Image (cartoon, rainbow, N blue to C red; front, side, top):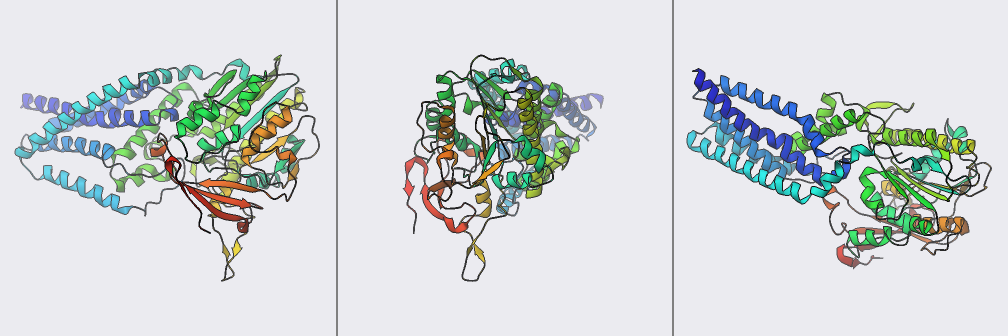
Length: 589
């Protein structure tokens, strides 16, 4: 009897290890490589965290197997084998699209058929092994072993093909402390260009009209706020080239080719570098691949773990990846439980706190600049800082503390987080004043897109029934209104509001004009525009999901043309549709 139990335990360990490998190794590895920029620690560090629960999981299955009656044991093994196969099928074959898992809600009522497909497959295969004899159990176990061997081969090939990416990622922990030059400014000529990701223009104005408005406005001494400023896209990856180069992507060439040409070509950063500026980049680690196409003196990838210890973030990365792996591996009807309205099952279960909330890391980085700022560089300095100051997920309370979980992306929560980010920017500006470099500096505070909520001042076009009609979704109007505020050198006085019809593509021309750079860009200096001047501006809306991050082209891009105030729906009209590979579907008037 003892020998039988030992044999059952050994077989359970073998089959349990195959199941555990799916959960703790194979599926996480696939997700890690597909989203490598989203993680700070290398995969080996994540495996180190997984090792103990993996062992406990296998031992648990072995104990159950050892205690199982001999006549039922083959069925137990076949169930473990079938679950392993089903996990592999779900994670690799039954892969459904759920959009970006970045804090936005998932409409679980959409695509319910996916759940019935998953349920039908899981039920059929599990019932097959539960109510069958050894003639079915043995082939199922052999199939599980075969799939396991196949996964091992693919994993080894995967690691071999991505050896350089793994090697680079293994160095990221060493980048916790930035190079000292990131903190250093010139005593006479500085350009501070802050991009607050997702900071919506009308929310900025609302903050300045709120309780903290007087203090924040005082910190923004000499600034001009461009209320009518419009963005080109509702996502970052194509907004950044528009900001830096003034050029707009229209699905005409592969995205990588466009990014290489624009970011590596004629941009405000590259022209400043050529003119003798020392260009410092401080950008999110997940966007490093975008910005490092540029010319720069120093580049620092701001990690998501600036506010916690290395061990805390190592554990957080492991838990985050585990939740993603569970989400990928379970059938549709269970995914809602794993996602848990962005609270995530394992993270909530383990009481995961603000470790992985990038907002706190990026505001901590602003504090690090302020606390370590020095004025001792001989050359002029162009410091470009891209931080997530008002971006999903929303995680702050009104007093700028961690809310304990992800909050709905409604206007009040977005405003709280944006205000907390703006407070840190204001403190940085006050430190520049103390050190005597604020007055001479050119300072640009802008966003790449809005925050996905309708502007309160949005006016609809009256329909026949007397109700407001919108040809564009009000949330898209919010996305099209990124913050833009600029302080010219030697400007002073209270913050002013301009109503000129500026565009995000005017950014490089504006900065080149202010700094005297000998460079021509598409667009115009926004200080050369006059209020009410007739001007057409364009905004592009498209569906964007993780599956397209590495695609050559974007989904069809719907153009909207705005002639007048962006807050007036009557000024918007539907433009062309830009299809992949340069095809254009003309607007129907």
